[in-house]
Image (cartoon, rainbow, N blue to C red; front, side):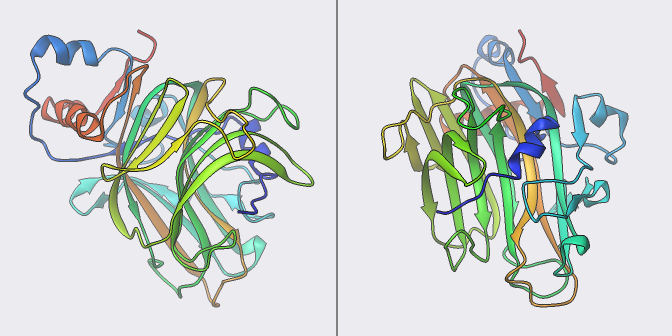
Length: 312
């Protein structure tokens, strides 16, 4: 997979991050109350129940909407605050990120929401995410990336503590050498900007993921394990050359939708949307996908729309 990381530096430099959001059924877990209370410490949960991107509850949760230019994505494009909203999607309050293009860099906008501190490392990451195979308006064909990931800044080429986990990079129209819908999960060691060269381990699922899916990643004991809808799709320790791809420093958490390039643009102005229903992180704890879902159910059954006890 030939992928330039050049434009990721700008985003990392302004402290890339993204807030996870979501929902699921409201059936309470049967775990004992004492165990439920213990699980609440060292955790992050957001149900994305906000009125708008300027809602003080949203901004007060250490979240921000990116408005700067730079990567990832098409050079010359910008991240537009207006591309971020919190509509009801399929019955659930959700984070929605839109991206639009008319086929020119100046007519292209991306979207990114950021959780602003580098404090996500070992443990379990989970989100319920809606991928889209077609735009909400305009023609199909754009090379768009719908993504959820954790990342640290790249301080310089081949920086040895650089860390990045791409929990999902969904390309509904292909890209990076793929010609059809593909979802990538990737664990990075490090890279250099130009000419691009990097060390990483990746797995590709070459099929449509249109619609809602639950993404879970566990980071523990030297392994990064990726699950989609409960099925293991990647278990990463080292890349093909033996470089360790387990993260080496805390990261930020990010939601992002961006166009890789404009080669597939069919004409006119096209608008794409991705949605996140909920997000959850358990610090230093390995959970099965079912257990992560049960934790989310507990928060929602209790009426909790946001929790952040990572520091306890």
